[in-house]
Length: 304
Ligand SMILES: [Zn+2]
Image 1 (tube, rainbow, N blue to C red):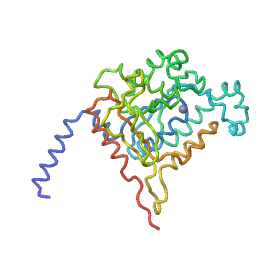
Image 2 (cartoon, rainbow, N blue to C red; image 1 turned 60 degrees about the horizontal axis):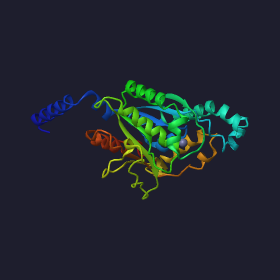
Image 3 (cartoon, helix red, strand yellow; image 1 turned 90 degrees about the horizontal axis):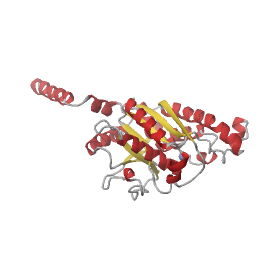
Image 4 (tube, rainbow, N blue to C red; image 1 turned 30 degrees about the vertical axis):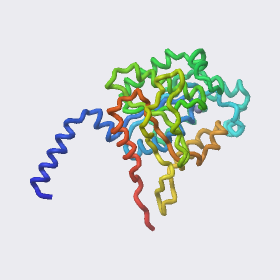
């Protein structure tokens, strides 16, 4: 390059950088993310994306868990043998699973690179689709929102990942997302992280009909905006034989008390991230850039 042009282009790049805010630069290079979920194992739906954020982009990812996970005793038949306790007995399961499942969560977290955990320990009472009852009388919602607000403010997160609150998903999943959105709404505009709702789908089976959970306007998904996607089937390694489902499977395997969760191995090609309408639209391109970088090749080609 002509030396004058080279100096000129460097100056333009420097000027461009100096006009960026610090937080924008941080968000672009190494994002800081908070996962807000109801149960240990809910993070499996975003595990490959989180792994790539922490390993390829050197980002920091924390996790806030809303429930104490005591309700996961029904399918612990194999867990009974692993842990040597009768976890499928309701009283025993409810007593022991909170500690067991926290360990399982953190073992999986070690694989995908979770930095820090916040346990809110609300009761995991039972399976229900009803978010109103969960928020109405099962959880201490004012505590949850207050605590999440404190965590989000202190962590200065660029993004929050939570489960997409579709009608068919567990009421606790819906509730955790409603609480996360409520917490973010209490933070001053301009300091709010982008909140993305996560779903898992197969190739060619994109969940594009969900527009928001009735009765909870903050869960509205922006119309006309595409989801961001992380493709678990992206190939890498020798002869391109490996893919990111391996990481998700490893994480699932750590949740040994959760029998039915094990059946999710190899299921789901895409981790999809949906844009809540309450987000600052100015950050959409920045978010698109994040997912573009996450799609870049990480492993070098191997030849033997
Ligand atoms: Zn769950």
